Length: 374
Image (cartoon, rainbow, N blue to C red):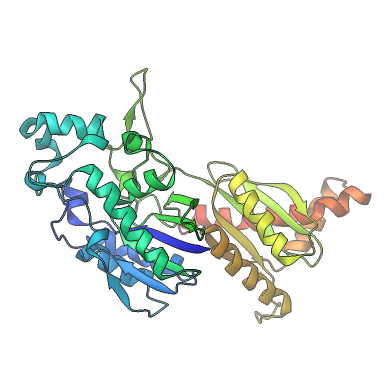
């Protein structure tokens, strides 16, 4: 299996001013630099073996941030570049329907058939980006590879690996700047999408799409709703690891309240990781908080080291943001909760671990709400 960690470049000036960039070599914006700090921390968890990037400055700087804690050589490939749109390049999006009404109608309503005069067709992009990733996978069999590209190119690739024809390109969401997708390829180059267009490492104020309206789609009733998963506020999973039982809790969609949901009684470590990853998919979470049982003096013992290992492996398998959260006194608090709710006997034993996970998660949610920090 070969894993591709696919990343869109950070916000550039063209993204702010809504100018069609294409092959224009714009630089990263100030907000884009802040996005890169978050991306670097997220990519720290991935076991990269190689890094590839479009040669555009905005992409290459993103690859440098993703590679910050890995120190690998970065290979540039022109095949990973954004669509070249000929006479569209450099025009504000607001001008396009006036200057090029027929081409703009295709871009909006039938993107698979889009081709600007002097540029490349969408079919060429669809084939080009697939060919680039196919080559990367063949050259890196069995490895984990970071690939940095652009919004339209990534949209085409996700369309292809989803098994959809180019005619259905419009059904593929646009992704936010620095959004992460994870694609697993087998030996026959069949791809499985593990994660798509996830930007959970960005706060709302750092999100490019979260502060723009262009990507919102009109529903049949005329209302506007979010047309992309990139800025969707997702739940957060809480984990209280144990030698025999692992408590699990989940937040509400607003990420304000934590609730216990289950206890995993799994002794096989690899199976525990897979079951936890499955719960992350089931509850549509954007991050996982893992209890971090330091000693009372702040030192790390064997249990804390086990939590570190679990956090690293969950990050590798799910591609989500993983946070280690100090759980000192949490089990005691869970016991107080059990007493207050008069929970006894076998039900107490089966519930206390999930309650501990909920307390860990609630502590993090309160911290996030009170400080504004992730």
